[in-house]
Amino acid sequence: MGYMFLPFRRYFDFSGRSRRKEYWLFALFIWIVTVVLIVATGNSQSEFGGGSANYAVQSNSPIVFGWILVTFIPSLAVAVRRCHDQDKSGWFILIPIYNLILMFLDGTRGPNRFGPDPKGNETTAETFS
Image (cartoon, rainbow, N blue to C red):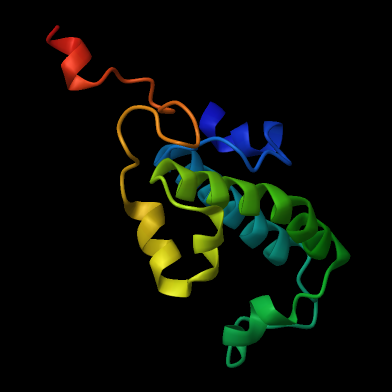
């Protein structure tokens, strides 16, 4: 559960590395809260029939907009740190499909140029020595 809120504690931290677990739990948390806010603040005149496909788009609540603003920077920061975990520059988040692939891949084992392994695992050489 701590990984879900860790990006809020590292709000403007674009350096270092982040685990897949941190990235995906934070993404899940953002999506759940966003859906709940959209449903809770939806227009009272909207119906779930016929035009329900546009329901989320029609929700123009300042609360939802505020939530998106509050989570934008930590989402960007955790995505950059996730790229760093694969020893890639943070600029790779600008490549649409490739950045999504990077979010699913495991990071480099051991330290890399962006910092120590966030999993804190020893390398196999250290384990058998």
